[in-house]
Length: 137
Image (tube, rainbow, N blue to C red):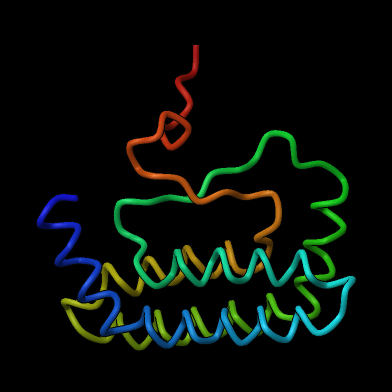
């Protein structure tokens, strides 16, 4: 891991990552209370780890995710997604009030979109070939 990524991750952890990760973990614990919502808990814990230390990793769509992920994302949106997305937006706006916080605020806004529909997505290293943008022919 490069030194810049490490510094960015430490700043992220202090400014937003710790509290947002706790929010995802709380949602994950709540989702594990019912058997039907366990897949949502797994997705929530996966995102908690990503939100805790995001730089050097990215989120990519799973190509084999189909209709069950779509239905699950609709349920997730209603149960927890909208609330976690609101937390990301509020944190992002707060971070954008300072010059040093603007990149972290923008990252929070992008994470709010992921928080709305996390099923069918995978966390991978930034060096993973799936993390590269698709080249158009």
